[in-house]
Length: 193
Image (cartoon, rainbow, N blue to C red):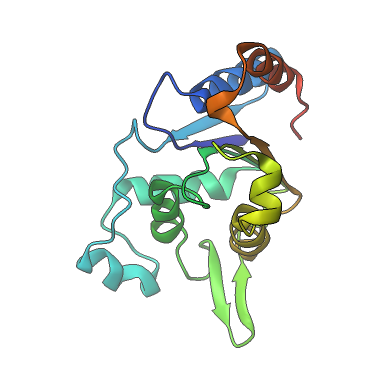
């Protein structure tokens, strides 16, 4: 099963257009997929004191946390669709990682003496699609490339994800309609494993 984790509050955004193109792609290929739409589902990314106290026991007070972790455990492929805000992922997506990725055997990860051991090794392929105001080359070479260095190479790999690729549509604010259409057409044909 392919799991799409979508993180944007505005249905007229380019991220939403990416979501539509990817859904069209998967439907045309008769691929089974499920969507977590963090804003539409009113996910609360903020920890309460009670929720934080349950973290090390792998428990939660939020039924969406349980649902989302179960979906992550069932997925062979995960596709993130998110904007790139202030040199990183949005707070909503960070809160998803913070709250949903529970420590404990059979959950998302365990903590050992040598560090974090990912339990989500079922995720054989992961695709991260972002949009940014800054050009992609500027993110990579002048802003520290946090999406690649932290979110992908550290966080997702620590959780056990494999074969992670990142695609950014940079310079979104000044992009032409033709460039956007070409990119979306490419997404409708991109092979997802």
